[in-house]
Image (cartoon, rainbow, N blue to C red):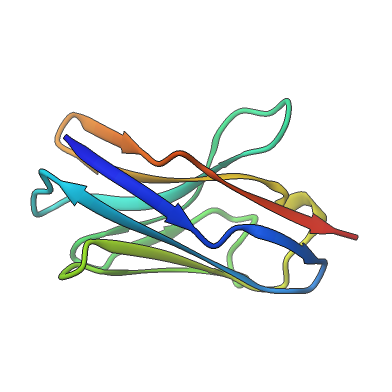
Length: 115
């Protein structure tokens, strides 16, 4: 079993920046994928960015050029640097770890961008 603990959400004005962090603990195997998803009120959860343990990244088109995912395999952490934030980025952001057929989720952290 894997536990994920997120931090770094908050309230920011449009154009501002926030950094989200997530630390994983428990039974973590190599070859996993860590990432961030978000869910806005009334919408489905959507992928924001993922990163393999080998360093390959995938960013959603809506955040490319503004958000950057990074990870530290030795510390089992993943971070999301969010710049040029927009009101439409407002959502609960969830950390995810995927390995084999198993998915672990964090409790979520609220990001609110005011216009």
